[in-house]
Amino acid sequence: MSDRSFICGVGLTPFGRFEGSTPLGLMTAAADAALADAGLERNDIGGLIVGYATTMPHLMLANVFAEHYGLQPQHAHAAQAGGATGAMMLVLARHLAVAAAADNILVVAGENRLTGQTRNDTVKTLAQVGHPTLEVPTGATVPAYYALLAARYLHDTGCTERDLAELAVLMRRHAGAHPGAHLRAPIDVETVLASRPIAPPLKLLDCCPISDGAAAFVVSRNAHSDRCLPIAGWGEAHTHQHISSAPADVTCGARRAAGQALARAGRTIADVGYLGIYDSFTATVAMLLESTGFAQPGRAGRNAAEGRFSQDGQYPLNLDGGVLSHGHCGVGGGMAVVAEAMAQLRGEAGARQIFPAPRVAFTHVEGGVLSAHVSLVLEALG
Amino acid sequence: MGGCRVLLETCAQCGSGDALPRGFCAKCGSSNVSPREVSGAAVVWSFTVVHRPPSGDCSEDLPYGIALVDVGYGVRMMVRVPVELTIGQQIEIERTDLNAPPKFVRMLHSD
Picture 1 (cartoon, rainbow over the protein chains, first blue to last red):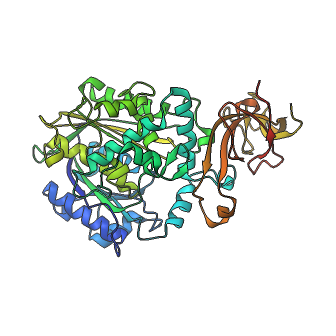
Picture 2: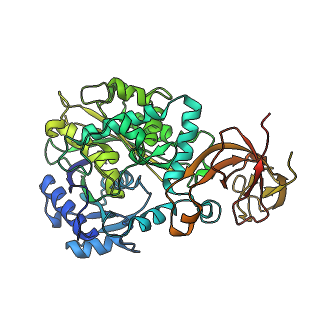
């Protein structure tokens, strides 16, 4: 039995404010694009994995989408692991493909997170990742949970808020070259530092926006063309749910998942030519870059200022603008991180393209409060 | 040291403590657990201030501090605190209900 699997198609809607959009409508648009990209038809799809949508809570979202989209797959299920869901669905699709449970698996998620509910409802819904009796009653929010990590990170490493701001500036600069990005107007460090406090040390521009949007992939047992990308390595770690119960080394899950993914791919970080790292907050991407080994402790922000993560740097990072600026529509936001890695590996990223195109990409996303971690190593074919 | 106490659930089998009353020990699986009070002296592991509340319910309190603090048995808990606090600072907290966060009592002088 072959243990090979490939991402053969990717589809991404623009991210932003789309009044009147619906979860199923956005998912349909992304699925259409992914199927067209893979050169497949609906009846080629044997497996379906659908990410949750906060604007459309449902016990059976995969069946709902299958019915809506006109699929009758042999396997369908809905998945949820917060921001890590998209990459986790790719891992699951990989397992289905390798097990020959389906030849082609559609992975899709999307929602109208910005326009489908009030901002208050979104903030309140997201805060529920905290513990219902021990954390939520304090009045904490997701930015506050991350701010607690960020404050400790700054305290331990000597990194400064100004250093973190460099990551926000870089992501905005990258988003400027992506026509589908939510936030594209350039910002500078002073603007980030002067933005209103949300939960210090995190200010508004340290935080990703809430977006409407969707993303989809097709994972297959066989490569139909040289645009198909092998899933060369994957790794997961689930260390806790609530920040109060995090391990003493709060980012150890990222390190474990990354180590597994690179080992399975037979790669080291020196082989990596593109980085897609989840950046819900500036501090998130700083901590993840450092725990996965792509920056020294406390250095990620300064490395960004020095050009290490720029298009022409040693480790080009989130050239779509990351979720900080490309946007965050929930599960689809984490998927966009992987979608840009695909564009770069295929040499199809247009103005954002790295030359020569990278051969190996490393992506890492996390969900909860550094709770669920998924790393992927994707490679160019051949 | 302050006199306030913090209620935890502790395990007679492996000696670990837990903020949550699970009825069993999440470390070793033993069901030989019972409530136990530890000192209310807590060390601030991290601290932030909420300027944007999770719902209208908390709006009138804005801004307010949130801290993660360490107490006995290596237990870390979230607590609502004043807006002026620093990492490493000692505070006194009180907790009498295993199904609720502790309450802030007062600042303690750091050593």
